[in-house]
Length: 360
Image (tube, rainbow, N blue to C red; front, side, top):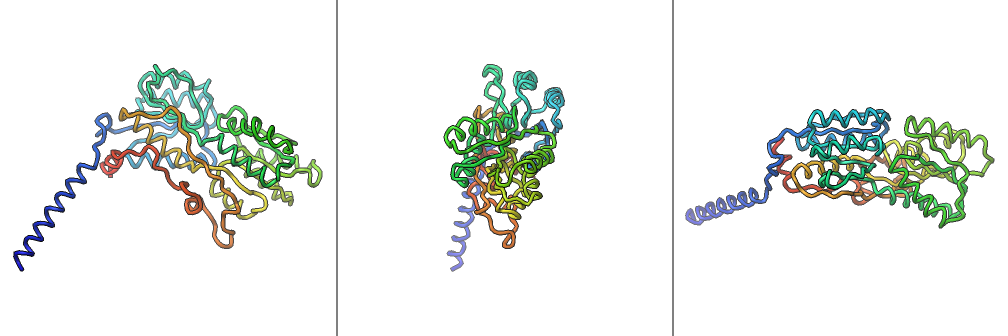
């Protein structure tokens, strides 16, 4: 009996050793190009206000911290010169990678080209730079939220609920790449296809104080329009949608609102007045920041990265949400309602787990 127990113990130890050895083999080594290095990255944003932008920043910060990356965030506060200075400073400070959010391509092009020529990967969100491949050498990525699709599914939500006929107060934000893409769907596909949709007014107040300016602009239209003249309101960005929502609620009217992007505040408003804010197409903005960090890591490791990448949006519809009496929904709850909302494994490599463990 003792001999049997002894043999079992030996067998257990052998199996444990082999399993441990297998796990060591399976754990991929961190690529030599970044192994043991203190990585520094800069996130340069055209603006950092609003819940969507803060969630993007927080997503990038959390992912950077996971891998021991020092991330500096530069909020240019809608000043393109400040954005340019932020990129130039990142180059001078020898940042390992530069992440960019928004901005204008013509204003930033020279600085972006300079960074790429210096071998610094540039991972761009909601913009694009036509830099020749011989300069960027495969280290330039443009990420978006699949804005063409977000425009389509949000605008089709309006079309479907209006049965293809409506007088619409329409919102666009010109010369901002993501909102321009969403507008192309409206102008080039929705209006020519669904001829019963009429635009009775267009609101564009830029990107500075959009919520307050949107509310004031729609209030003016609501007070000067006849009862029942406006059938629906469309917001190309949720910061505008919040302003429109406040104007509609304050007016006492029941006008359906459709939009793009989502936040905890948006969800609360939708649940408070489901008859008003009907739907919003969205991507989890935290995931955008996470993916930017991963792509930068892959570029620094010498791995291939795509020139373009689009995340998959969902249509958050108020009819899919519980009533506010049943449960107050937050962004964290959306993963229980929509597949793929809460997380993404895009561009995660096995060696990243090793890197994560090494910095704990």
